[in-house]
Length: 260
Image (cartoon, rainbow, N blue to C red; front, top):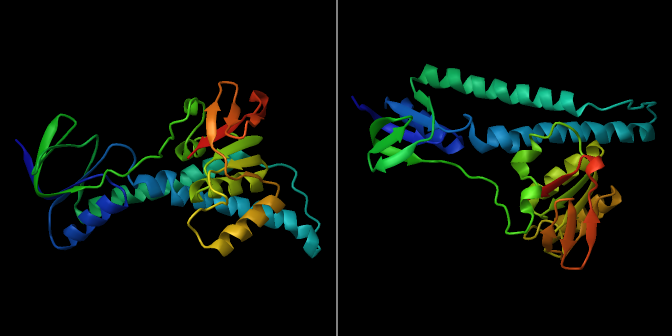
């Protein structure tokens, strides 16, 4: 027998969860469906884990600056593995909380790939469910540019799956995602180069921010390649640009090519 709801949300990210939460406050019976992990992009591979990485990078920066303020501090080692474990446990705590919160509100949750059958019917895991209102909030995924050899790189999602700090990194894209990850990796010890098509980082942002960021990143040792497009990435991690440059990320470096 088909189960009926007042509202069904396909996607348990910020949009879908907000919709069913609000509807439940008005006494509506709701179902939310998620194919991946509850919480969506922001909680799992977006702003929340990124902020954890930013705090780690900020701690590294403060430690490196401490001697200038009279502190005798020496960093003997840094464990990316421990940082990743702590970050992943923090995220798991949030997703586990969501499970209990939905149960408390009386909202049903199904893990599976929801498909819209018609305007009032959703299919998931071989079962059909109906509702007066269906919210489509499936979220998004990183866009991979049409570059030959793009498969040799990773997206921002892959950044959160790294099991070790890469020694050398090429970040393709000078937007805010690439800029944020580049800054984190640089602060934690990676050698970083950014390749962007525009004449500055953060195209479309305030010019004062662009100028300050260019100056700061250069001062911190990040190599900036403005006005640069990537023609090809080879299997040995050689990057071919429109300027005829060859940037080789040697395999022994534990390299990363991040495609934004």
